[in-house]
Image 1 (tube, helix red, strand yellow):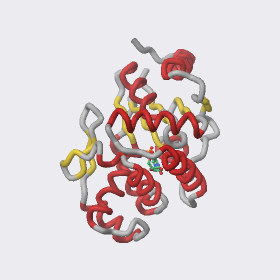
Image 2 (cartoon, helix red, strand yellow):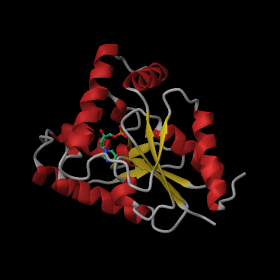
Image 3 (cartoon, helix red, strand yellow):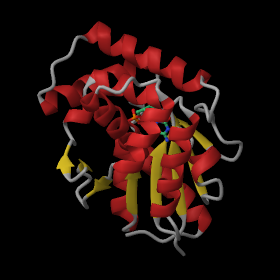
Image 4 (cartoon, helix red, strand yellow):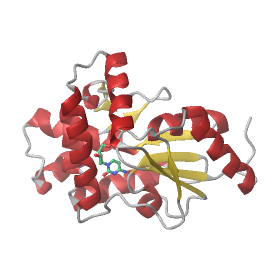
Length: 222
Ligand code: DC
């Protein structure tokens, strides 16, 4: 039996890492929906469009392409932006454009079109509540802000991106607030989601929690 899996939670809680591991385990496709909001912020900045100008941002979305390859690289209009969208500026920019209702409508539609059928793992903020409300397994992944800041910093070091620790923590807390308090589809645990606090868990331990749920659901994995 193939299912869909929704993984939601605040920034840097480990959603993408866990989603990738589960995709590999199950042979499913992973869609990082946050990357799509980042691509919108990236292109708007490039074109000098204000991130709160809903009409212009939507017009821009209708003329751009966002694509992924099988290694998880992200492309805007065919150009690889995988690294460029991971800066602090693009994190906050993505959170800014994600407040706009018409932007959300466009991206949610793209996400639903991509993940038609079963065998998809989507991670984001509104997957369990809006994008894949009928996902058979919904995980709400949380972690303390300190644990999340440490993980983000490790990622920055690996990717050679410059950072300032205080700024990273402030950015995480600012985005938590903004993503949970916006008017449209705020970050919220779906009623039928399973909450997992990964502050003191390794990646393997989180994956084990998911494996146990897969067994309960009767889903086979290697
Ligand atoms: O997961 P991320 O940090 O790459 O997401 C960047 C921003 O995009 C996040 O601060 C909020 C927004 N986002 C969203 O509103 N809905 C999603 N499904 C995914 C991301």
